[in-house]
Structure formats: structure tokens, C-alpha cells
Image (cartoon, rainbow, N blue to C red; front, side, top):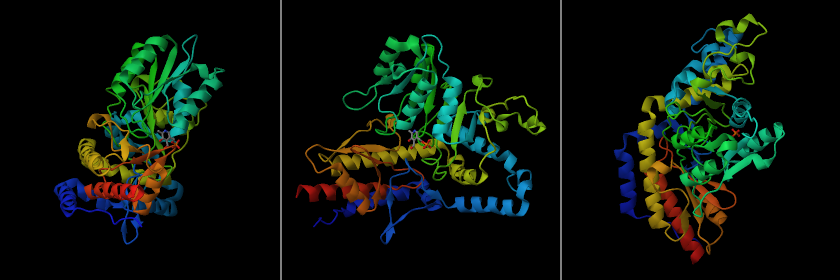
Length: 427
Ligand SMILES: Cc1ncc(COP(=O)(O)O)c(C=O)c1O
């Protein structure tokens, strides 16, 4: 029999007081929290699929109503004419990633956008034809990179993968060394903003500068960074980036993804489609392509209105509260979870994510220490307790307290559940 969870009333009172003292705690009421037993889950999976904002249903229904009552006229009339659907999204997304609104757009999905961006930005020539990734990159990123090499008739020897150190963290020195050795042959670096497995924040500004100094372009996968950490893509001179909208941005499963293209690449040749043609002459149906200015010129097809509707609702709190306040709350919550793990789970799990607040976002990645029961059994125990993180093969548990809807009491519940598992498995 598992022992009852150990809940120190003083510690619980402290967690409750921290939540009560934080005005942003009220944002949680704007979300639907999945049930668990007679209560709700402590949901730590916002780094995988963000929770549903209550306002989403209304937004979808409003678009269904427009379709029913106006049909094709919905492109021009109604509360949000479909032709202008990008405008509001661009206004809200720009500040989230640190970009002029015109240089971001919502389209397709992340892996598709990586392909479209690489089609335009990865132009191997002569000996400059390598792509640099971090070793252990998200599989889709590696598939995209390798398939672009193959598309150009190149082999995996032109894939340069920078390894983490023995602690599992990626070091600035390792990237500097890779560019020192191979810089003359690197065409493009494709790197994460936040590494999906260990939760480490990458120094986008420094990596972009490094790539540029060696004559390469810098493209970022911001799946785990957008809506999570502070981004200044334009100031950091990033060439291009893309991110999904279903994690920290709460746009719903498979939601259309975001893209940033630096203004200096406005005229770059690309794979194009009619929706990227200049808005003013798009419907002239002329054969020639003339790109709409900014990132909107990278669209191919007319946008999926019903899939974009949730984003109108889910980006609104970011616009209302602002990234600085959300990032500050995220650091408080993640710092609190980190401290709890170091007391309640000392000797039980190793924390794989950097400790410095600037070097991590919401996510803390854990690995059960060698010599203990298998990590998977801890994960299963947490799920049974209503503490939902996620499991990344072969042995990583990720917990992400999200500032929009997680509470300090969720963090305490996770730490207590881990302690309960450790006590029961060592008994
Ligand atoms: C870091 C990273 N890159 C790429 C992807 C692939 O995203 P999509 O399935 O939307 O193409 C994911 C999905 O979780 C991800 O976490």
C-alpha cells in the first residue's frame, strides 16, 4: 500500500498565500482545467498542449455563425472579415516574439513552415552547404534538415550536430568551436529557442551573431519558446523562425503555426502561392507573383478560419497582460517548483534543466536517479495522482508550470506526489 501523501499544513498555507498574493493567479479562471476525480488535474503539460481558454468556444461559434449567415460574404463583412484575419493575429503575435507585427504571420504547421523556410533560406553553394543543429534536436527538425540535404543531392556528412556536455547542457563554447572548425562550410544553423527535452534556453542573439560572423544564416524553431520566454527576434537579427501555437500559446491541438521573417529578407525568393501575392492585386488573377510586403507574403493558401479562431481568443491574454509580467510569474512558479523538488525529491530525481532563471523557461525536466525504480513508474504514479506532466523517451519527465493557469499549489502537489512515490518504492 502506498503511504498517504505527506502534506505539511504550513507548507500548504504558504503555497496558498503565494497564489493569493499574486494578481495574475486570477487568469486561471479563464481556462478549462481537466478534471481528476472530484477535483481537477495539476496540469503541467502546457509545453505540449496548452489548456483551452474559455473564450475559444465563443470565437469558433461566432465564425460558424458568420459562415451560416453570410457565407462567402464573410470574407468582407461581419465582426472580423476573413480577408483581414491575419491583421489582428499579427498585432498580438508581434510583441510575443519581439517583432514588428508585419514580420510575423500565422500559417500552416511548424514542420511545414520549417520546410518552406529552408526552401528559401538554405541555399547551398560550393563548399558552403552544411546545416548545423544541436545533437538531440527534435526529430522533425532533424528530418527537415536531412531531407533538405537529400533534396540538394547532399549526404548526412553535411549535417553538423553540436553535442551537449556530460551534464546534458549545450554550451556556448561548443557552438563557437563548431563554427571555428566548420564555419566556412555552414550555410544555415537551425536551432531551438528552448530545447524540448532539457528545457534549456538558447542564447538566440549570441547564436545568431555567431552564425552571421561566419557567413551563415540563423533559423530558429521556437516551439518551446513562443509565449514562454522573452524573445526579441527583430533586435536579435534572427533571419527566420517558426513556432507552433498549441503549446504556450493555447491555440488548440494542431493549431496553425507562427512564422517570423526578418524584414531584410522581404524580397527573398520563396516557394509561393496566391495568398502571398500583394493583397491589393491578389484578385486581379494575373499570372505573375508579386509578394505582399512582410511575412504575409510567405503565405500560400487562404487561411483556415475555423482553425485560426481559437488563436484570436488565446492570444488576447498575452496582449492584455504582456510577456514581461507572464515571464516574471513563470520564473516565480518554476523557481518554487525547483525549490520544492530539491527538498521533497532530494536524492530521488536529477533536475536536467539549468538552475539559473534566465537559462530556463517554464519547463523543468527530471530524470529518476539510477538505482531507483524505473522513471516510468514515477510518471504513471503522477498521472494516477492527477499530476499530469509528460514523458519523453527514454527517461525524461517534463513538468511545466505555466503562468496563465498553474498555481503554486499545483507545484506543491507535484512535489508531494513525487515524495510519496519515493517513499513507497524505497519501502
Ligand atoms: C521542438 C519541436 N519542433 C517541432 C515540432 C513539430 O511540430 P508540428 O507537429 O506542429 O510540425 C514539435 C512538436 O511538438 C516540437 O516540440
